[in-house]
Image (cartoon, rainbow, N blue to C red; front, side, top):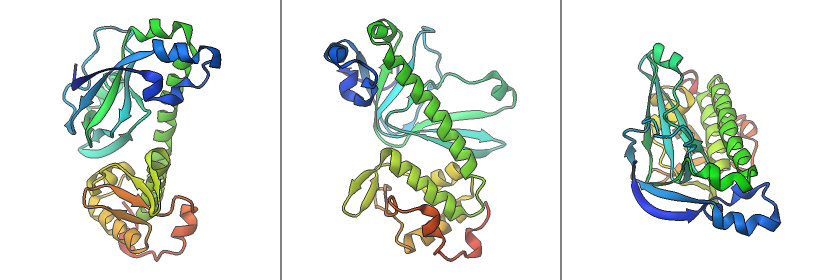
Length: 250
């Protein structure tokens, strides 16, 4: 098992949104019975992420805090999936067909993270509260929907369009509102952003300069970001930005 154990927590306290569908009359009972182990994982490569669990009933890892990336390499060209609080992941599940095409993936943590171990005993715990399994399944389906959005986004011609929509997505999911815009507490490097949107890093850096000069994003010294257009239609904002040649193409 990876990471450092940090004890057991009541899952519905750590992730209150999972209580959706549980009847109010049994909510307190569910809060007491649904318990999971939490592990603290430091930033860096996630060694052994794809290790097969000992039981086929093992559900997966629920991210409670932090940010995780899955980097997929196709012909040495990277693409990144960004995961954060609320995502249920099963890193050991890799379709055989991808292996046959020599597609590899690597997992890493962008910051110190806390992960709930939703193990094989959770099935027994959840027998009285089956709706929580449906909610967890919704998390898996939502992840697939977001990946579809990421694929569609990568088809946009302008890199600054791709970046602005990516920041909007990350701000909607994990941003923290404040007096100066929405703070995105994830350290996203220019390289990571390039892999997220399917572009070359130098052109992403140029487009980020354009967005920063337009007052739409700002990167803090610690690598996190502030997004200033969370309440504005991204395309309407971008319509007023010049379209220099260096921001076009991938």
